[in-house]
Amino acid sequence: MKKHMLQAGFILLSLVGGTAEIKAQSLSEDRIDQLNTITTAVPFLIIAPDARAGAMGDVGVASSPDANSIHWNASKLAFAEKNFGLSISYTPWLRALVPDINLAYLSGFKKIDENQTIAASLLYFSLGDITFTDQNGNVIGQFKPNEFAIDFAYARKLGENLSGGLALRYIYSNLTGGVDVLGAASRAGNSIAADLSAYYEKPVELGGKDAKMSYGLNISNIGTKISYTETGNKDFIPINMRLGGGLKMNLDEYNELSFLLDFNKLLVPTPPIRDSIGDVVLGKDNDVSVVSGMLASFGDAPGGSKEELREVSVSVGFEYWYDKQFAVRAGYFYEHPTKGNRKYFTVGAGLRYKVFGLDFAYLIPTEQRNPLENTLRFSLLFDFDSVKEGGKSQE
Image (cartoon, rainbow, N blue to C red):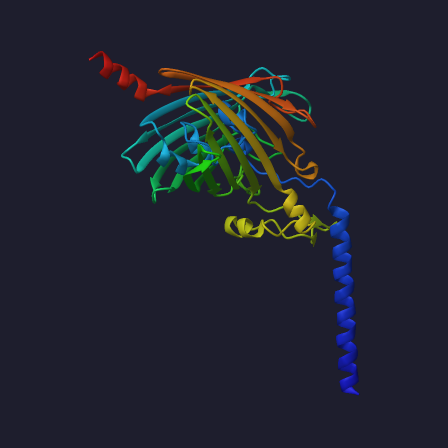
């Protein structure tokens, strides 16, 4: 009798488990086409800050190194052809709506020797003027919110074709100026983060032409969560994995052509589906540590593997140089509709003349309004090697 009761119990548990699995699968299929974007604090950290990458669909992890490489992949700087470079970039933000929001970027690098390079950068995001009011509409103060990040990086060749890089970052975000929000005192948010990167390049020959294949990997913003109140929940910063490759071809003495491809995925938890009392019904709990969140981000989407794949955004870019003095660029960025629906074409140009260089970028959205539409962003570059060469030639 006991034996039959145990068998019946096992059968009942199997039926219950199977029913739960079927329900979970049904919920997963129902959720796959619903909007479920991943949000983080300080999203300005993953905005393309320079006009060169911005003109090529926001690619940069495997492009040729320049003064802005610390943002995309610091390890590229070990292969920089110049000994010293500096760049200043300016990006208007939401220019179609407000005139005083912008992103500024200052970056530079210095080669220590043929194997080692150091770099630093400052990314500053100004959010204009905000007027704070109470529940009755009375003005209680005004403030200019701002955010910034300061980076220091080191890159080193690990072989003839391979390099590695490390960047350390301090992040500051002051959105309220200490004004009480919903009865709670607010404060500026602070975080410390790091980037780990690798870069590989190798000369090849294609169709009788000299070419170079390149590959890059950068896991950026690996850092502490951030909070704006003493008692509030802490939010993930945009930990991001960027993986890509590139092909640069020297068509002849004057013409050079490059094709680039980047894949991006946020390494932070996907929001789960919860019931009316807050219990997780589908997906995984996103109130976890930074390390746990990074590891779980590859398999925590409520919609399963299909949704995980949709969290990967794709960038493709094209760059043409004539005589290393004039460049034309274009690109495309794609993000799935359920993960933000950012889709846009980019175009741009670049000029190099002795010490100075100037890059322009323009964005054309295809699906929805974009903060960068109808704006021209630019980068000003300085080639100090040319100054030294000019001085030596005069002597």
